[in-house]
Image (cartoon, rainbow, N blue to C red; front, top):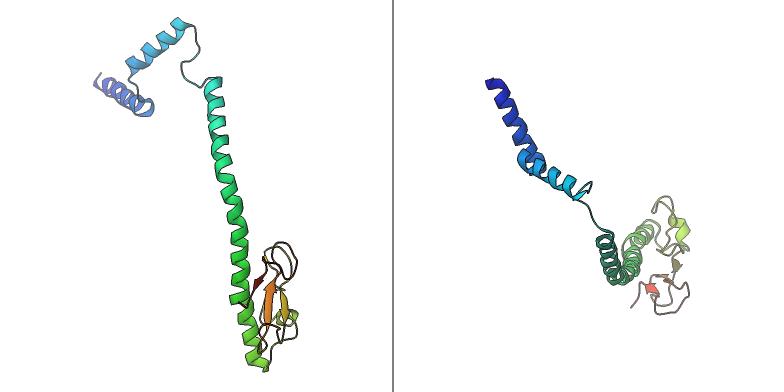
Amino acid sequence: MDGKHNQKRRERRALLFLTGFTPSEIKRRRRLTVARGNLSLTGFTLIELMLVVVIIGVLASMVMPKLVGKSEQAKKSVAQADIEASISSALELYEIDNGKFPESLSVLVGKYLKKDPKDPWSNSYNYKSPGDHNQDSYDLYSKGRDGMEGTEDDITNWK
């Protein structure tokens, strides 16, 4: 008898732990549900669900414009980092090894770069040696989002 009592006690504790209700509370809730003719007292009404959807829509409409602007700024930062760091480093190493800067960026592929560098808008970087702006070295730039040279969205290695 003592074993059955302990077993029931463990079951009650487990039920309380899992559901948050004692067995007597669960029985009382079942009686209320049957008395009201409902299958369940839990769940959301259609109006509650629609309200949640509207709230999510309002929040999304406030956040999305800010995220779109950050994407473009991130692309500009990646292009600037490519120009100032990875491609420039490869050009400097080529110049150390060969005594001059290469005639094109494609010469760097293999030994100095893994592949032909592309800007975040999938266009090739533009390179000229000697440069018009950096006459003792090279000009390296991306035409930016619009793909047109000489516009304000160009990203360059000169000021």
